Image (cartoon, rainbow, N blue to C red; front, side):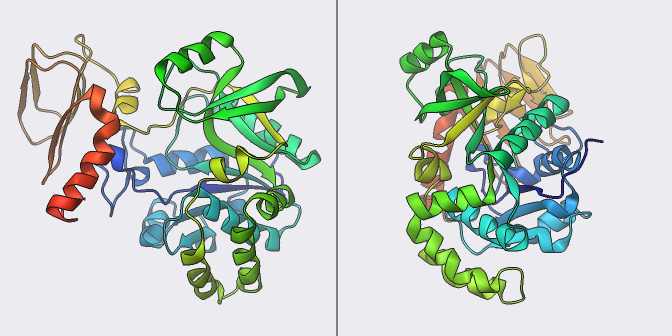
Length: 363
């Protein structure tokens, strides 16, 4: 067990609806609460277990939509109930980070915080722990907004990219030059060839005073709203105060709102077997495949002349799959999805189309 530091905290962001994993991920049971890869644990449980190795459980917070607080409690029974932080509405990651930062600051002005999504896959736990501890020690001593960057393995257009300066400023820490959101394929290829770009993993580390100063500078209107609610944080009045604040917050990500504007941004190039499990194709990449390249979840699937398909169907259903190449086939009790893997980035749009035409019954 690594030495646990009382000023190290984690905020796990677990409020999304995971619409790209529809129809397995639903509004009332989104992907962070599912066992996407048939491991016996949900993505949230894996995330918590990674952090509790080196962060005291009293210092681990899960920020989620109020609809899911019960689910978090069921899946993480050892997490103190007060550490399940409820958002009254979805306003993207900047308000989420502002809320938890003000809340932790009131409790511990010396806090150093990791903000991480609940739905990432990380294969190399010890390498991840080392990167996080290195990051926490750096932000403890420096006024830095730090992100973990992933060494890219392919020119992927689904990720943001971070360009960094060649000179190291501390042990494996580099200053960030630019952020580029989801480039086209040609640009992504150029980034990979240059060697000074990393994928943006969306895992951020900072001292609580540093991030609050950044909010004051770059998102002052959000900061002021939470300043008004500070009196109520960590008291019985918190829920009511936050319910008044949240509807007034701008819907903006921490990447756009702060990280792309700030000058004190740093990155640790990392390699810990990371995938953001954002889409069915990313699940396919991480699942065992048959000799024709099909990733099949379901006990009664018969495959004839089909290759490189992602298949997830109920164990009790017999499914015969013939002649399909590179398709996603997901069957649930009330929805069947058959979609070309090439079009999976559009699943979010298809879900919006269903909402318009069929209402919310199937979401």
